[in-house]
Each structure stands twice: as C-alpha cells, then as structure tokens.
Length: 261
View 1: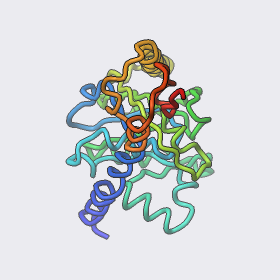
View 2 (view 1 turned 30 degrees about the vertical axis):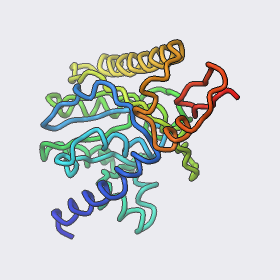
View 3 (view 1 turned 45 degrees about the horizontal axis):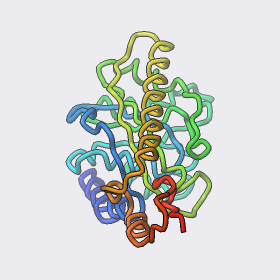
C-alpha cells in the first residue's frame, strides 16, 4: 500500500469514526490549546490511563497535520494479530515499540527517532510506559529523556488528561460516556541533563494536575448552571438538560451530573 493511500485511510478513519465518536460519547474541555506549536516536529507527552488517550490527543490538532501524527504504542499489544496490526498501522499510524529488552541490543526508540528525522512529525509518547490505574498518577520512565536528548531542538509538550480512564479503563471493553479534561503545558526543551529534564517534566505535569484540581473545586464552589453544556458529551448534555432540579444541589457534572431528587 502506498503512503498516500495510507494517509487517506487514516484521514477517513479519523473524520468518519474517531471524531464523531469523541463528540458523541466523550466531551472534551481543552485548556491552553494555544501552547501547542503550530508547525514543525513535536513530542507530546501525557499521562496514560486508557486507549482513548491517543485519540483525544489526535483531536487537539488540525486535520492538515493528521498524517504527521505518530502515537507510540506497545508492539506486543497492538501488533498481536493481523487485524489489530492493520488498524493500528494504517488507521491510527502508530509507531510500535517493544516493551521487552532486546537480546540484540537494539534501541527500542529507534523507530521514533526515524520518524523525527523525517521532520514535521508529531510523536505521542506516554512516559509511564503502560496504562496505569484509572485517573491515578504514577512515576515517569526516562525513555522520553533519551528521545529529547537525541532531538534537543524538538519541543516536548506535557499534557495532563483526566476522564479517559473513567470513560474506558484499562482492560475494560465497557465504554462509559464521561467528559475528558485536557490541560496543555508549556513546551520544554532538552536541558542537557537527564535528571533535570525529568524533574522539569514531572513538575510541569504536577502543575497541570493542580490546575485541573483547582478548576474542579472552583466549579463545585460556584454551583453555577450557566453554560453547563459546553465541553460535555451529548449523553451528558441530554442527561443534564432533561433532569428536574428539586434542590439547589448537584454533584460534580464531570462525575455524571447526578441531581438531587
């Protein structure tokens, strides 16, 4: 299959399936989208709790940059059979990497480096290495530092995701309509030292996590109904607009908008 045909299939998959799916089932509330560089190569690094994470990140970019996006994914999972491999490679455009040490001493990030060398590529990298417990933060692995060191001029943009782990937790096939919050951090560049870079990345993700927490606390304290439909999935908007409010109390809308009766 030619590269042009592969790009066309990826485009159709995103426009006809992925984008409508995210709009109907998973509402997205994006903060600081303007921090994403509008051109050039880019490494996006985010916490990882669900298979939906890559789809949500892809939705942050314009359709004109879609064919440049390469989510990094575990080869042992996404390449386990021919059908899964075809969907992963042709429709999503993953970069498969091995999570097990290579006996031949090959660099597991070699494929990522090859994509970045081509220029204008957008790499989605999950430094946790695997999906964690839903909505739980965990330590970051240093693979992202090795990638940044090899391409010091390529910005690394930290992104904090919340909600995908509830909408589609790891090892679950049951999708729960749940709003997703996306917080984009300031781009980082390679600092020259691995430990310093990892500390800066961890600090950036922690800052985004704190901002998310404060925004939810403010939403609860404001107890405001104005603009309730913005950023929520169609299911959530329908549930909210069709509810009868008997008391001026409600739960966090992001947790399902369970109204008091």
